[in-house]
Structures are given as structure tokens and as C-alpha cells.
Length: 215
Image (cartoon, rainbow, N blue to C red; front, top):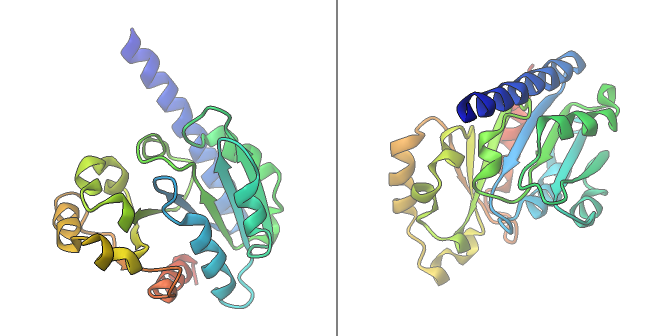
């Protein structure tokens, strides 16, 4: 009985995600869902990279957090539209919350929508929100063993961003270990090393975003 209840909940979630995706498809926009642990640098990376996108690419961000509007406030000068979604005690954004976020946006004025999911390496990975692509961030301070410990997060990634690489030498980070673990679960996603502080790799991330837009 419990299995049936869980399956029913997940089926309803997937159905809502498909509604969101069809809605975004009808508006002609591309949606990227960004997932990571807290403090991996999602907001800072968006602050740096969104203004670097090609002229005329209209952007919006749905920001997910348990409380506060701090990340949305940081992004208000980087994207044309920003909406904060507070989940209270929820450890991830749900498709229904994204639906409400879409209601708050002018979809006709958006080419690219970024969902900055709640910082968590477990819960968000299980839920399709209607996005077209998933970007997963792994910061150097988190350690080089996280791919093996949290494989579900990385299995469905369309791009993997290794962030804060300016700290790699100080923390004796083992990039080879990360690549070896990724080779066991996801060989399709490109891996981009970057540092928002030095700017290394940010252009490569910008180019990857740009390539996701249909011609």
C-alpha cells in the first residue's frame, strides 16, 4: 500500500512537470535547472555569467530557498526577471511551486529561464520540474568524494560544473578521483572547471548555456 501511495505521488509530480515543460515550450523558452549543495556558488556564478550572454537573450531566474529573498536580491541586476520561491521547510522545489513561479513571470519576454534550486545534494535530484537541461555544481571545498557518495545527483546531469577551482591546490583536490567516479555513472555530460573569483571557465559555461537555445 505504501508503495502505491509513493508511486501515485511521484506520478502526479511528473505529470505537473510535463505541464510546466509544455507551457515553456509554447513560450519558446529554454529552462535550465541548477542543482548543488549549499554554498557551491550558484548565485555568484549567475551574477557573473548572465550579463555575459549574447545581446538580446532575455533571461529570468526562479530562486529557491527555505527562507529570505537574499539570493533574488543579488540577482536583480543580472536578469530581466527574478522571482523568489521560499519552500519553508521543503528541501527542494516542486513542480507545483515552479508552476506558481511561472505565473509570476512574463514568459513571452523570456528566452532563457534558470531555476536555482534549493541547496541540497539529495532531494532535488529526484524531481523533474519541467526543465530542459540540468546543470550540477560541485565545489572544491565539498571534497573530491561527493560524486561517489551522491551518484543520483550526477547521473541525470547535462553539464557538471566544478566550481571554486582556485582553491584546488590549497585543499589538495584530486580531480582524477572525480573524473573516475563520473566515468562510472555519467560519461555524456561535459565537465567544466571554473572559478567565479578568477573568471576561469566562466566563458565556457556561458557558451554551453548559449548552445542550449534552439537556432
